[in-house]
Image 1 (cartoon, rainbow, N blue to C red):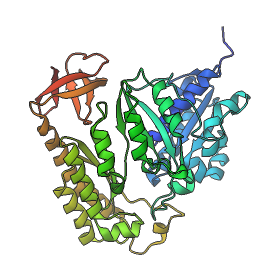
Image 2: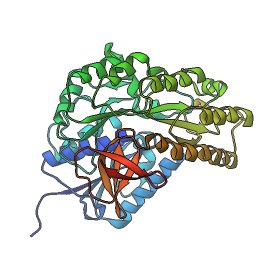
Image 3: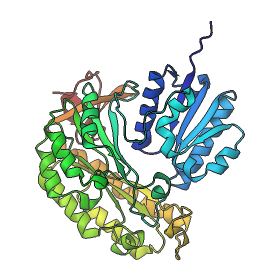
Image 4: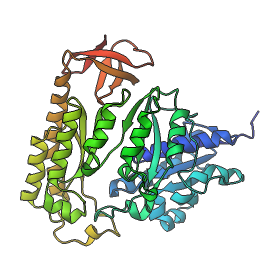
Length: 416
């Protein structure tokens, strides 16, 4: 017998913020009496949270929408997120797209579709209990928007100005997640948390440190100048903090950083890495970097290449520059060819691979504290506090456990 309960599938592309928003929307749909399905073919309603940070991301969104319709032609498809903000008219012209919801309306989609009263006037004024779970680690978005207006970045145009979750609500929502093993605190520009009401990320982490949350805590990316000795001293006193830092660098050339409109220089980046190592000698340090920015000749690219090779980092996320209409960089002279961008990506990946191979060697005969992440082939993959992925032959259980690496080449570990 067919029930009147509607099946909702929520898809997303892009960053951890979009991942969090998917879980928040799922939780709200469940509270309003909908059923959440993990198979879009079974859905009555498909909600797709999009990304437009690169041309590739936009193309992926278009492909996903076409596939949703092809696989489930009777489903009601609604689109939200950054690509919906940027290309509303185009998306509405697609005959299978039922409606578009802007980022400001995203949090209210479940209420809008169910015809119930809208409760939230701000997209960061909510309580999150993580009742819908797909992953072993929870994510909590505490900040949205950005006003840095870097010359290559479309985010300020589609996400708007910085907005932060009030501190008391951050602390409350973290307590709602007390049954989790790990919580990742994230935002579009996390380091700007609290800027609207005279607070900062350092003060927030001090307050969090006094709460004695029963799960481990990980931070998403920060700018080099946001990683201060004062912040690191607070984090070093937290027993549950994961020593894993992701730095939004983008270029190792001061000339390119200036053209990008970044508010720091190479010395700031080097200092941030050195200061992290003072407080957390074994921390994992990841770096975002863009290659092929307009005006980046081989000499300037080599500055980035040498900086990353000679700096004590653990891994990189490498992106070829993607021209975004509406940004300053899109009209700059000396655009770099696609072929040259790909070649530079390859060169940096050689360094990245070397970093990823060498980083685990620091943990030979050292204790790692890990959480089970997922089953992968015939092994159980676990994530250490340092964001090292290790593999065990036996299920280690859901709680954090101590392990030792016994095979550095394939990252096989055993429970201590």
